[in-house]
Image 1 (cartoon, rainbow, N blue to C red):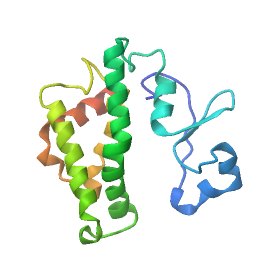
Image 2 (image 1 turned 60 degrees about the horizontal axis):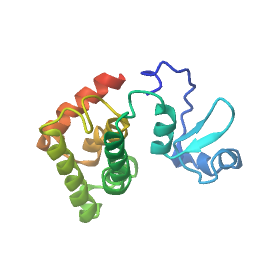
Image 3 (image 1 turned 30 degrees about the vertical axis):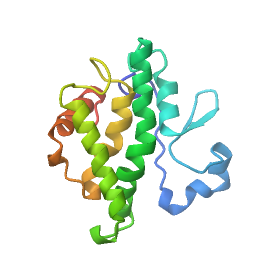
Amino acid sequence: MLDRLRRDYRWVETDVMSGVTRSPEFLAINPAGQTPTVVLEDGRALAQSNAILVHLGEGTDLIPADAYDRARMFEWLFWEQYSHEPYIAVVRFQRAMAGKRADEIEPRLVERGHAALARMEGALTEHDWLVGDGPTLADLALVAYTRLAPEGGFELERYPAVVRWIGRVEDAFGIG
């Protein structure tokens, strides 16, 4: 996003498995001990991916000007946190990071992950973007774990509109 907005930044890779997010130095920045965390130019810190996106997206075309479309964007952002990330990202973490086999994953997590992908497929079958005629923060928030879903064993080929959308979002934001 910052590249698309042509804003300077410094990326700090954080290995959450190493325990660094529980260090006194990290907890001084983010008491929740979670990533992502952004330290703004004035030294203030902001956590939670969607809060960060909204803050950085203020005043850009990534937040719709129309109040209804803006509310729909927020609807997708909230949905991502409660109905997508807890399944897609968790299954991906368990498979790709924790090394669990498919048969060790709670079936309900996989089922809910497929339900999330199916909802996106339905929304994207007739529309190029989740909201409106161009990319918004909703697209950026949802592409993050959706594009990595195969690492959790989710077969994206079952969701061709989602696959096409991933390509559009990657192109729009220079991801890949």
